[in-house]
Amino acid sequence: MKPAALIMAVLTLIQAGMIILQAKYLSLAIVNLWQLKGIHTIVMPLAVFGVVFLARHLLTLSKNWLLYPFVETTTKTLRKQFMAKLFDLGPSVVAQKGTGNVVTMGLEGIDKIQTYLMMIIGKVLDLGITPWLILIYIGFIKWEEALFLLAIYPLIIFFMIILGLAAQAKADRQYAGYQRLSNHFVDTLRGLPTLKQLGLNKAYADNVYQVSEDYRKKTMATLVIAMTSTFALDFFTTLSIAIIAVFLGFGLMNSTIQLLPALIILTLAPDYFAPIRNFANDYHATLNGKNALTAVLDILQRPTPKDREQLPLRDPVWEDQDTLTFDHVNVKYGDSKQATLQDLNFKIKGFQKVGIIGASGSGKSTLINTLGGFLSPQDGQITVRGTAVPHLDQKAWQRSFVYIPQAPYLFHASLRENITFYDPQASETAVQSAVAKAGLSDWIATLPEGLETAIGEGSRGVSGGQAQRIALARAFLDDSRRVLLFDEPTAHLDIETEVGLKQTMMPVFDHHLVFFATHRLHWMNEMDYILVMDHGQIVEQGTPAELQEKNGAYVRLRSEMEGATVK
Image (cartoon, rainbow, N blue to C red; front, side, top):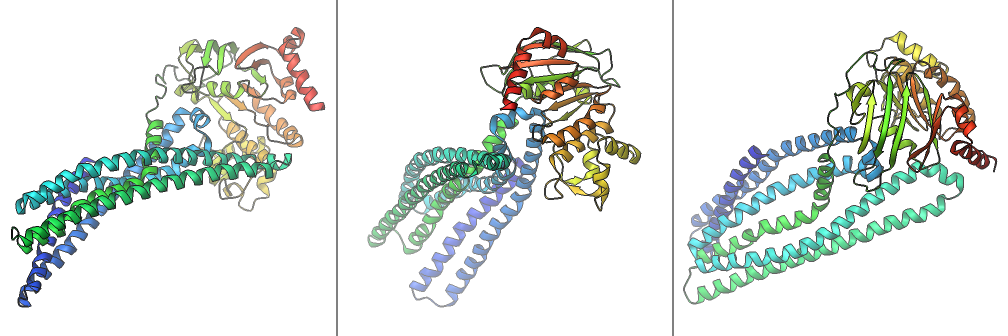
């Protein structure tokens, strides 16, 4: 920013000089015309005025032309840093801020930042240079008027600060309302099929209306402050110029000042106040950009896990004799005082299928996120292959697993590119083998463009079962990834689709360490080891036979879920 700001400061200084020359030669032409002098005495000052006037506005265009590449580069860099930071921080940010808020921040928010930087940098430089150069020039003509202009300036700034703080408070509430509206909008889109199925879509429409109405009221309240601020600024600056005109009029009547210098001072007075008026107007226009910049910087300044290379890199990363141990591990989201996962203790060895079961809100997804390295423990010890690590955001561990959530993300790309996400250089034979194992061959055969068919946002849609099979094909394709993390992968599928998908998934589990979080009980019959979770704690663990024999939390949970299913 510094080189661009320095050049802009020089251009602003030149532009201030143009403003003074513009006022001088326009006043000279008017005075000559008033004194009925020859036409030749008017043409030259008007010609100089025209050239200077044109130069002044060309300098404005030049400053914008100079600033735009810097602002564009800055916002592009900011967006890349923001996306990279979200990737490093994992789903904890989305869980805390809300999906709609994060999406709004990364897209519209950064666009608002671009507008904010584009307007505010030039206005600040203009405010810091132009009025003072004009004031010095007026001081050389008549120091009394210069002193008055200097004295009135802090008073205007004082009122602008008061109104600005009020506008800032209103804008903060408006931006918070905007974030809430964004989250509601995304949540409504996601849950619309469920709401319609339950017959709650019309009732929820009232909720959406109330949120949007609340945002409208906050916006109007902010505009009221902005308009009041503009009125106050215009009132004080107009009143100040009127007082200057009165003083100059008395000076002309008392012959203490000539017409030319008086007219120059009167012409320069509006330009003296123009920078602060422009700054105030743009300040209100860019409050959302300022708030968005604050929110983005808050994300960028969050600490990311360090010590990511403590686990030695090995190929394959996970083998039959390797162990993973959690010893008194506690995990919490952000600045929350209460740990979401408390005192986790378990030891897993080799290629086991580990089921994670519990009621909604018991901590299953949080445990999967911790196993994926998306969340870092605050206490306790994690040991992988005999190496103690502070968290699982280890480069070696990340190369070892495939994460399959409830709704796998499909990129706006070809079907082939989506399948080869983990291994872009995969051969055609390997891709076809992965497609066959995932049960996608028949479906792909019906597509005119086959594997080159564009899917994802804005392209061909796929069903939930097909999306899960694409995610499985990714796992089949890269055999070096021996750890599979499943987070409720069949939660949104009907039972027929789930049964077909289960037949496809079971072969994937062979020679893999599998963590499978679900509330579908039939999956537990396929597991070697089960972790039963309740309120963020592992209340019971063991093989299915051992847990059945204990007749404890696992049996009670199965009874409750089966009873709910029967009802």
